[in-house]
Length: 221
Image 1 (cartoon, helix red, strand yellow):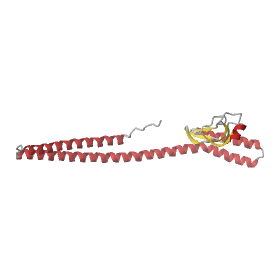
Image 2 (image 1 turned 180 degrees about the horizontal axis):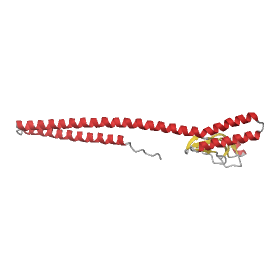
Image 3 (image 1 turned 90 degrees about the horizontal axis):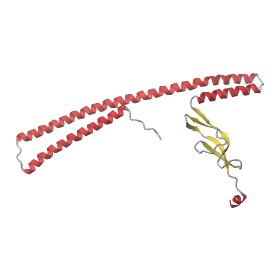
Image 4 (image 1 turned 90 degrees about the vertical axis):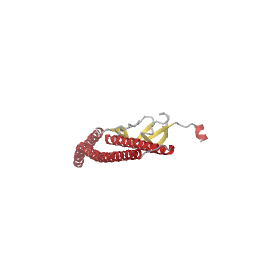
């Protein structure tokens, strides 16, 4: 099951600030509407409203408008700062990722340099000797050295001869009737597959067995 990534601190803080801004704005708007409705209601009832009361209501509304404008300006400023912090955070993460990639590449290439050295020695030796045994031994040494370097980086071989066919890890290009194997068994591997850190890098190319058809089945076919 895929892991859920927790929101970054800057994004989470930004969401909280935006929600607080919306809550405050809605509250002030509701209070303003209530005050306006009160004035309209009193006018409709015919209740006497003094000039002093009207001025007081207007002043109260003006103060709330100023308060709202001040809070909006404060939240806008906060959001701008959070946005700037988040942009800096993204740049820092990208830089760290690029550095990590360079270090990983450097490490892998350094591990493969001895393989390159031995290949050069093997080529030089092959040109100066007719002893096939020494050449084969040298190639085997290089092969194991190269494989070991890749395995240190998480490489695993898929060599499924005799295993049941698995469409996720194997790619069947041939089927052959066989009474020596169960149906859908890998009877030959044309090309090995590989995993890297338990993720499929390349499926194995294989030949798969199928049940031998009887004469009756062939006749029906």
